[in-house]
Length: 290
Ligand code: NAD
Image 1 (cartoon, rainbow, N blue to C red):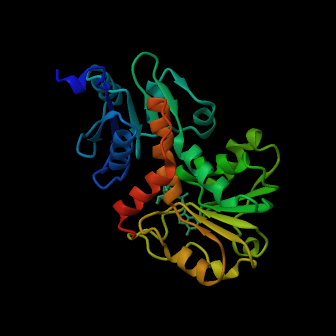
Image 2: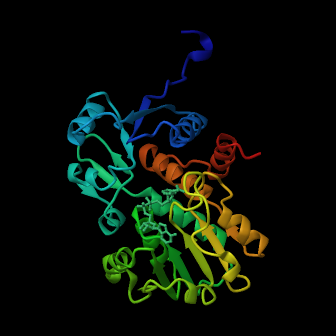
């Protein structure tokens, strides 16, 4: 040991995995590794892509990670619900939403949902100082459960859920009826008549991604001043956001949710507080936004 090493402790290695199908392009691994290192941690993040694994034995996957000393696993499509069969404890949000994107491993496994906390933190910041009023959410699929659970806890007067499939919107409303204390309702399949009546809209469908071009609704039909929040982040500026901006509406892109879920995961795994601004700048670098 050289003189300059005396008193300097090597941090223990923190190993984290991402479990999912087709996760090669995910930006979560580089976000974790960069921020982990910037926090002074020996942070290793590994992809466990199960797309080619056939019949997946999730219990065996988790046991192997634990045997290899992994502290946690982020979990993504299609395992966010299934993983709950293999945990000992779930946060209240996980129990309400019915899915998790983070499991703390070792001992009693604990499931968390940082899609919910990450989305909520980004939207809270965006809405600071704006009246909450009535919000419309378009899309009631897997991510829509997490965003809707955020919305019902954010003090809106009314949260209206719309989906191309009205039964998906109805099921979401039923799921959160207790937590929502009367503020949540379905659009009843009628999107157009709501667009001019809302203060803001959260878009949570795949429309606008490179593989699903277009916009799920016409932002030009919104009332003046209504805001638009997007969860799609590839591309960061979707057709919906471009048109909403052109029509003069304040917009929030899908970046803060993607960064927020990673930041909140790092905090739960390490007990240290990541720097969200620094992570967002890195995310923009990764996604190719100057
Ligand atoms: P999903 O397939 O589970 O659900 C999509 C829902 O949208 C379905 O209920 C479908 O009926 C509905 N839908 C589709 N087209 C519609 C339309 N034109 N109008 C109304 N409803 C429509 O998908 P998901 O897991 O909920 O993901 C949705 C999107 O959220 C993804 O494409 C992804 O881009 C995004 N996402 C972003 C983050 C992030 O961190 N920013 C995290 C998770 C998901």
